[in-house]
Image (cartoon, rainbow, N blue to C red; front, side, top):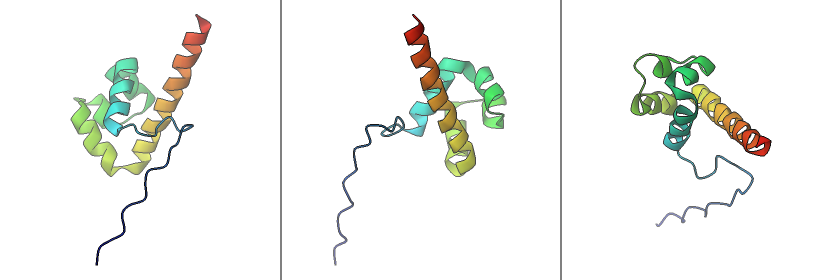
Length: 88
């Protein structure tokens, strides 16, 4: 028996996280805040002690509550960037 094909991904035009990888999110946060700023906003050892993208991804993929915090900070960063552009 063949398994039915997976459902087609639904368009989520209002979801700013849709289609983004965790790596893209962490990279954007590091570019915006830097490792130190990121560690100050989310106190995780993967951001404060010898930080790297790969070690952060490894931890965040195993830790749903930490991933939620990172995604929330990313959404906050997007709002901040939007406000900065509108203020110009």
